[in-house]
Amino acid sequence: MVTAVAVVVSPLLAAGEGPSTITVTSTEVSGPGSLSEAIIGANKAGGPVAIRFQLAESGPAYDAKSASWTLRLSEPLPLLSAGTITIEGPLGSNGRPRVLLRAAREGIEYGLCIISLGNSIKGLSIGGFKHGIVLYGPAATRNRIQDCHVGILPSGDAAVANETGVVMSEKASENTISDCSISGNLSLGVYIGGKTSVANAIQGCRIGCDASGTKRVPDTIGVMLAGASKNRIGSVGSGEGNIISGNEDIGVLMVGKWTTGNLVQGNLIGVDTTGSHCLHNDKGVVIKSLANENTLGGSTDGERNVISGNVEIGIYIEAADGNRILGNLIGTNITGTRAVRSSDIVQGNGVEFNTVAKNNVLGGLSPRERNVVSGNKVYGVVYYGYCEQNSTLGNYIGVDLRRQAAAQCHRDLRGLRLPPQRHRPECDFGQCQLRHVLRDPRNRIQHPSRQQDRHQHRGRPGHCQRHRHGDLDRRI
Image (cartoon, rainbow, N blue to C red; front, side, top):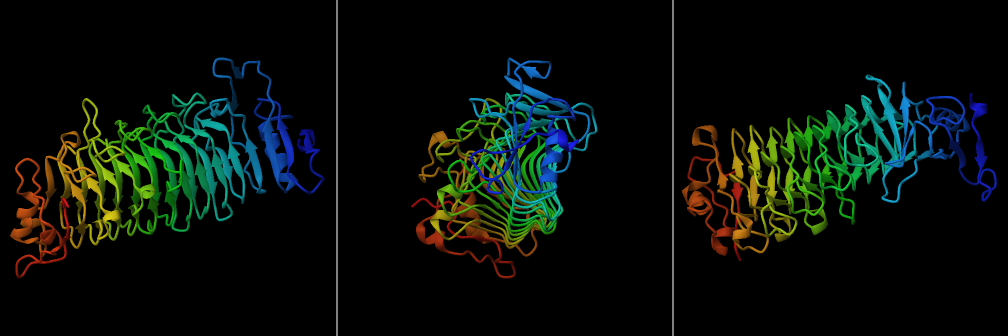
């Protein structure tokens, strides 16, 4: 009952001037002192409430080796419905959670579900549920999930799998997931879905790897945006980029109509926390099926992604239009000077456009927008299918960030591959441009002069001039 929960107003604040505090003293599923009763009490209080833990370091729920407690839940916790509730789990000296919420049986729908405004979840590890944390509905806005482990143990090095780690859907907006490890989940690490689920941010997280960012603890797909717009994966501030590495399939997937205006910036995708060692996804970033007008990277160093060390491909775009890939390192380490490879893994292709991909831009007219696409096993950039009207401008392909074809960078086997003529109707670069791109027998890239770089080759009469390769691979 609610009356069994102790609600204490902080002695430093007069009533009405600050949040009340509810203390969790029991590891039981329900009853006095339990987390369930604390949430019920916080919802009833209807104002800012902080839920904190004061648990005995003894008993069957306490593990002395990891200095953590396990709360085994046989049913979902009560909804956070009142808003402005903070649940603050204790952190160890290493900054990792000391409280694990673990499903006591299979099939429990969620661990925590937020349907209100301005809540904060800190310092919890959550595993074994269908969905670890859910933010649902139009009222679920301006919430923050911070310093949590979702799908991974408090130790940060082994999975306690949910089906999906974090879900934001049905108009959940302006929420922030920061400094979390979201790994080991059977399906998705983070899912943002629905055309009005907007302006959410994922920053400073480890997704698909352990809490140190050095070991694989894979989700199947790290981050999936489906019909969601104007969300931000990573950011330009110090520590705001994510490590999205170690996933079984895709690091970041953007798919479906209304998936537009999303930013992927400042992340390490396929490499470890150093930005130099392989911690592979199978595929780095996939944009497909009408996911239009999204941006990977930007024109500043802070916006740059490192998309390297992935098994099959760095970036793949299929049946999606108007996406921009700017200023990234694709195949190299964080310095842009060496390839990322392990003993048996080298990223296959750097960037691939396929199946009616149109009006996408790789690089730009500004030097700050060029990508370095080097160190890949096969192609730096490849076009397949009926893709058209795409632009590849100003990039360094097969050379490093210093414009040097250094041995340490391991040139791509082939710089750029175009589809056969029969599969690219109305699209031709002209024989002059093909010679510039493909002539080098070692790298399949010729480094044109400044004058040739700046020329927009128009192809032969009767052919489309819509693919633009301006100052491709220039060395100046």
